[in-house]
Image 1 (cartoon, rainbow, N blue to C red):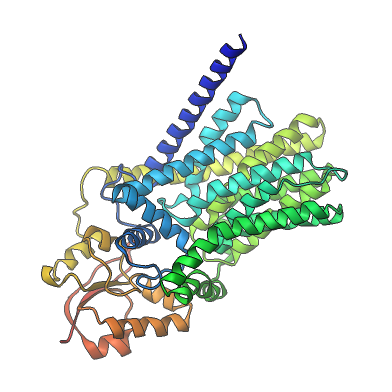
Image 2: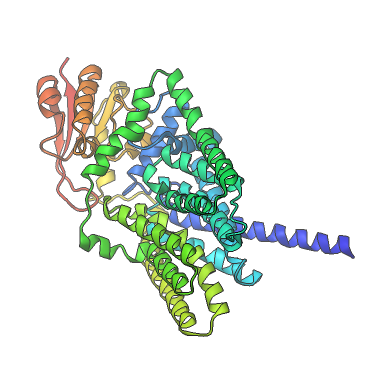
Length: 507
């Protein structure tokens, strides 16, 4: 009988895991327009998404990030895309990695929820909640997407420790700290600001262990955290040192982004409009307040600090929707904590908890629903045939590219133009600064200097130029060494007037 029950339980677990995998596939196949086979002709908005694909493809071909091709992200996101190209030699490999990421996220959302609600309901909620990610997903293959499972697992561990700790037994599992370190290392090697929530939580854990004099446990956790961070960062450091690209690596990963952070801004109006897609942070703050009222002071202040810290950081960054993705993992924690509060209380706290829970779900579903409507339109537009209308900016860019002779396409760089052009035309950028040139130049004079030095050194035969009448390379490069061979007026994806120019090097 015991063996039979074990077989039944194992079968249920397998079915559960298969269900989570199916849900992961469905989420990514519908919402990741830049990698999903459902949208073979979608190129309209994919900027960062396409840039990462270019970096991954070129890294696999032997071009070193930062030395040969530049972007201001850490190498982890390029590595993910490189592994994707290694798997299938196209963007479908990246799609497979995204599905795995979504699967892990659903699995650990379930593990969080099942501690406060019954198993079947936890399965349903986990499967449905991953679709709320669509509110800030922004067409997929962005840094935050790959960080989400790390963040969910971290808060699964953190909430587990919070539920068990006492002043008499304050110890925190050092293996949890190892994973926090791995997560922090991944953020350093992709986008450091994503680590804000985990770093705040770790600080509270340190304070708790310190106050309760758990010195040995604190030391063990410190060692494993550092070890976890090193596991991720050190291999990249060694790799780029071997490639004689240490400064290039740290400039693209950290130094440039200091200038970017200092030059970033957000308006109050934009911040308010972002509330639905950042509801996880606000709900976590509210949950923390309710816990404080119920005299769970430490837990409540930790959650409030995590939510407030995340929002403060987002307020001081550019208002790109995908930045808000890091607030999504707070929703399962909010549901877990509120369900515990609702179950244990019969007073006004119960009513407040129910209202907060309903408000969180409604706002999150509202934003996800609006984005889903957008995706339905994208599916109708980009799933069947190439868009042929004259005002399609990307089609115009591709058609304009055809003016470059085939025997000279080995020396082309796109300037301010969508990076998808490199993928669709199967060309390697002729300069390491191959995308976002003027946008990146806005934040750093050092970048502008290096940009001009690179173009003067490489002097590609052709520059496919888009927009901006006063580019960062105009006086030093374009005016001296290039002539405009072809020009054309058009619009960008936002409908703004944007001219296209093909500059040919004067030989």
